[in-house]
Structures are given as C-alpha cells and as structure tokens.
Image 1: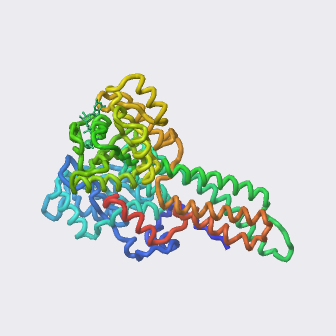
Image 2: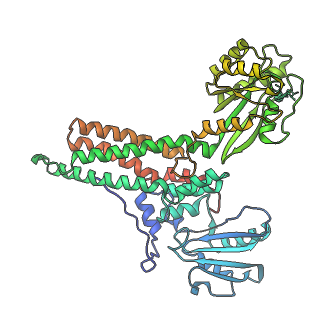
Length: 491
Ligand SMILES: Nc1nc2c(ncn2[C@@H]2O[C@H](COP(=O)(O)OP(=O)(O)OP(=O)(O)O)[C@@H](O)[C@H]2O)c(=O)[nH]1
Ligand SMILES: [Mg+2]
C-alpha cells in the first residue's frame, strides 16, 4: 500500500492549541523529541553574540506572547493584533532590563508557524543575557541550534530543502552561493521533485489497484505513459545530479595549487592574482618553504589559491624536503594544478619530465609559462608549439593573467550560468537522487520486461521514498536532528 502524508497549514480559525499541528506532525513523522519538548516555548539570541547597535531575541511557542508579556508591563501583549510593533520597557519585577521594540507575530503566519515574539534590544551582551535569563525563568527554554527552522519545517512552513537552504543562505559568501541558496529557498528544485513524485504516486496507486484485480489480468496503469514519465524523471534527476559539480564549486570553492621548480615565479603569480604582496618573492631559489593559502574570487566563484615550495630533485635541508612533501600532498588534494615554469630556462625534456611527475599525482594540470617578458617572439612561438595548452604569462608584468583567470573560471564552472538554474549544492540530496536514479532504471527495466505490477511496486516505493526524503515528506528523526544541528542557535 502506498500512503502519503498530506500536510496542510492550520488556518487561524482552526489553529490547534493542544496538541499543536506540530505535535500531530511529529507524531506522524515519528519524531524523537517527546511531545513535551515540541510543546516547549523556546528562546534564543538571533543576532550574533557580542556588542552591537541592537540585538534581537526570538521567542517561539504557544506561550511566547504570554511570557514576553509578563516582562512588558506597558501593554497587554495578548490583546494585540498580529504583525505589530510595541515600544516600551522590559522589566523583570522592579528591575528595568532595557527599552525594547517587540515584534508580535501569531501562528501560523510566522516564521515557525507558532506564535513568535522578537525583542529588539540594545546590543549589549549583558542586557541580552539578562533578558534570556528572565525568559528562561518564566519557562522559555533556550532553543537548540536550528530549532526555529526545524519547527518551521515541522509546521509545514518550509520543506526540508528550503529549510536547509536557510542555513546555506546564512553561510553564503559569494553572489553565486547566495543565488543558489535563494533559488532553493524559493522552492527551486523542490517543486520539480514534488511534481514528479505526485505523478509517480498516481501511477503507483493504479498499479496497486491492479493487484486487487490480479485474477482478472487488467492493466489500469498505462505502461507506455508510465515509461514516458520515467524517462522525464530520469532526465530531470540526471540534470540535477550533473549540476552538483557546479553546486559544489559554488558552495565549497575550488582549490588551485601553484607548483613548479624553485624560482619559477609561483609566489609572484600568487601575489599578482591577489593584487597583494601576500607571499615573499626573491631571486633566491627555495624562498617559499611552507604552503601559503589565500582566497581569490573570480566572478562570484571562490578559488583557494595555494602557493607551494618549489620542487627540485636535490634538496638543501630537511625543512625544504618537508616543504616539498607538503607541496606533493597539496597537489594530490587540489581541484586544479597550475604547473608554472620559466619559459626561458625550461627545456622541452625538463617540461615533459616535470609534467609527467605531477600529472601522475593529479591529472587536472594546466601548464603556465612564466617570464614571457624576458623572452623574444621567436622563442615564444617555438614554445607555443612545443607546449600545447600552455598559458603564457608574465607574473611580474601582469600580462596574460586575465587569460589564466578565464581558464580557471571555465575549468571550475564549464561556463554554465551560476544563477539561472537550480543547482544541487547538498551532498544529502545527491545521495538520495542517486538512489532515485537507480530505482528509475529498475522500474523501467521491469516495465520493458513486462513484469507484473506486484514486482514493480517495491522499486516504485523505493523511488518515492527517496524523492520524499529529499523534500522531507518522508523523514526520520536522526536525519532531521543531524540536519538542523548544523544551524546556528537562534535560526
Ligand atoms: N622577469 C620576470 N621575473 C619574474 C617573473 N615572475 C617572477 N619573477 C622573478 O623570479 C624570481 C623568483 O620569484 P618567486 O615568485 O619568488 O618564485 P617562486 O617560484 O615562488 O620561488 P620559490 O618560492 O623559491 O620556489 C624573483 O626574482 C621574481 O621577481 C616574471 O614574470 N618575469
Ligand atoms: Mg615562492
């Protein structure tokens, strides 16, 4: 049997008091924290800890308005309409805590779907702590990381992909990562997956129905239409899985290691790319002994540039040897390896030997010829022929650097637009979609072999399960706790 859980947000008229909609849902989902815990009113500082102009303390739960009201003698908050602001003194007995602005929201039209109070206070850690203590004494316990968003999810305000994208949005540090997170938050690929899942459920119920009439050998589910749907699903899932490469680039950045012989100009290149004198440059071979890492943003994509100790065959001392070991380790870990060589002193044989040595550790290698300012057109032409795929630059004179950054950008993104399409950035979604993809193949193979409906059902159910797991229509408590534990407190 196929069952689905239909979640509808409670309307103001039938807003449940006890048990809350959230409790009912947590029961349906088999949530671990007991009813009591979800019934708690929670509070936390929503702004970063420390001194600032203002701080915001958030309270959510059935007692949010009552608890905040008990500290706010100026007005009876329980009688105030939703989405209103109230200025006044917050008082703990006779003790004036602060002059604050209270924002009042009533569930379900709030972030969490519950009654929510936000107290805008002065940005003193001392004041904020006093307010949190007073709230906690009146029964608003401190929220766990992500608990506000977790409640929003459980109350049907957000699906799981959207909830996860809230954390991504907070963590976003480039326009590309912000766009990807916003796209998911707006429902990006959740909509696509939900739609496919619904269509699959329809077919699945027809096939289940056939089982009830198994003696009569009827087919309610049109197999050719089912195959068309599966093909469409396969396409969508493959595209999404392919987008993860880009998503990973957007989310985590791209590591680029600069390697080469001593004195090739690696540190000079790092400095030129960063437009900063970050690494020490000198004419002494073996200047850089440890790795130096810096961030470069190329059109919204973060590259982690790593300058390394020059690799040579005869080391001078143990420190240089250690530096080279580190260089080799970084080469193995990097997404892109820039092999920088001095175009004037590197023979064809030397180039080939070094290239061979490095590409054995990491094949994603881009040769970059440096010091073209010291060479002449004739030698350059010869080198262009001898070392195909090489980018010719002068790190010192800043020539050819834009060609190099273009190449880096191209290698990282494949020149796909970073903002238009839904991209997968989350490894959890990838793992689930890989299972969906496998299940689709199995269902298709089954239909093509004309196997009976009862044998198709387990694969269809598996497919539905993993689709539902992504958006959170099906979920388990361990997974949820894990996802939301990655949030900050107050979100
Ligand atoms: N003419 C010329 N000299 C350069 C260029 N790039 C770097 N140099 C010089 O080459 C020398 C070595 O530069 P570095 O950047 O320290 O070289 P490196 O590869 O980091 O060297 P190690 O750290 O010792 O491995 C310095 O004197 C630089 O000024 C270039 O494009 N043209
Ligand atoms: Mg150096």
